[in-house]
Length: 292
Image 1 (tube, helix red, strand yellow):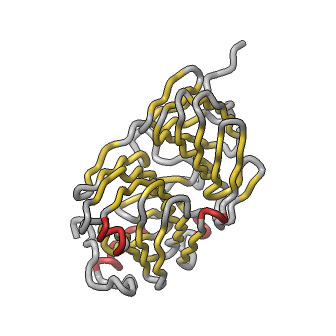
Image 2: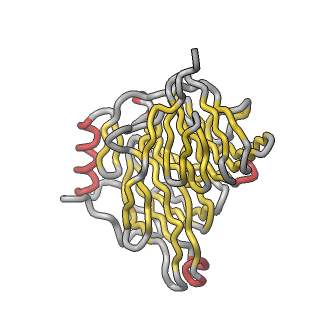
Image 3: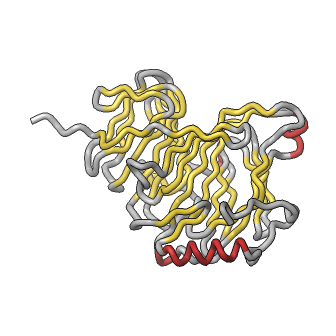
């Protein structure tokens, strides 16, 4: 008997225009809300900012999740209510644990705003386990040189977070997961471990084949539980690999993720009433609560 196909679902993102900045919204979707603990996945850009222009995501709050910023091109200046002031560049990891509540802004650094820049990257949210979703907020920056590199024939992997292929990232996580940036030469193959139970691959550029199905750039393939997940690069490709053990159902509204609607309603009320802390160095502007 032939083995069962490994593809569970193919997802195409929904395009979003955030004021001239192109975003592809992959998760959540009507077909699939989460992959393991990953509840939000956006591809940012590629976007080109002319000299004098830049990214300006004003201060806004989060609860119940960790945000993960990973860039292929450009730079982003992160500030948050813990007093963190950090520029992230390609290959680095900014891992911000919102926990019970944090506020942050994301803008183009002064030098890149003056000169202009191309900006391209992936932003994801990881839902925290119920027992830690109200933990103390935290932020950690990991330069690219601190992240494990895994090299196979025709395949180069950077382990952003979690454990995979016998390596563990220094990025501290609160649940079982893996998150990798993979570069594959044309014709190269890579087989994902059968665990954890939920696994997916998002093709940033190039194309891959799974079960004889060609998967083009801008597509997420979610794999069946326990099935062999073998990728073959039909062309030189960049692929984000992600997954983990489910943390249970989650509510998501605006920038808030929680196991209970009550936690989200409290966060909405706190933001509207100005009870969240300010972002040092970026205290003037903020994003209002939608519909508030």
